[in-house]
Amino acid sequence: MISSSLRLVPVTPDNFDAVCAVRVHPGQERLVSPVQKSLAEACVHGETAWPRAVVDGDEVVGFVMAFLDIVWDPAKDPEHRRSGLWRLNIAAGHQGKGYGRFAVQAVLEELRRRGADRAYVSWHTGEGTPEPFYAGLGFHRTGELSGDEPVGVLALT
Image 1: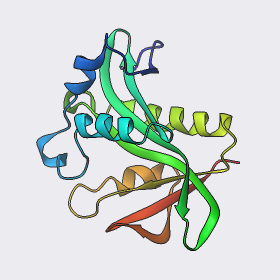
Image 2: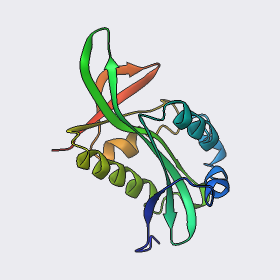
Image 3: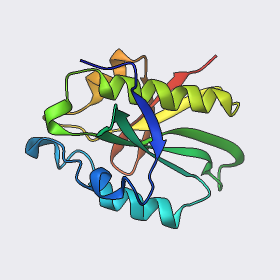
C-alpha cells in the first residue's frame, strides 16, 4: 500500500547505498539498466539528467531518472528539444503497488513545471516489455526509434 509520504528525492550520500540496492525482477534485467549505470550516466550528462530515489516513508522502493531539454536530432532539427522519462527501476518486491505509476506521474509534473508540453519515453520490446504500462499512462508510439527501442510520447497540456 502506498503511503501518504511517497515522494521523489535527490540521490544523496545518505540514500546512495539504498538506491544502488534497487533490483528489478530477474526477468526484467534485460529491459532496464541497473541503477548504478543510470547514476554514472547522470554524472556524465549532468546538465540533462534528473535522477531521483522513489521513497515511501523512509524506504527507497525505486529509482527514476528523467532527461530534461535535450536536442533530439541536431542534424535534422537543431531547435527540437525533448524531455521525458529515461529510466524507471522499481524494486522487485515493490512492483504492482503503484510506485511506478507514481514515479512517472511525478516526473510528468516536474516536466510540466519546467514548461515541457510533451514527454517522451522509449522501451525494450519482447517478452515482459513495459509498453503496456506506458500505454496505460497515455503514451503512444511516435513511429521513431531510439536505437532499437520504440519511442512513445504523451501530451502534457
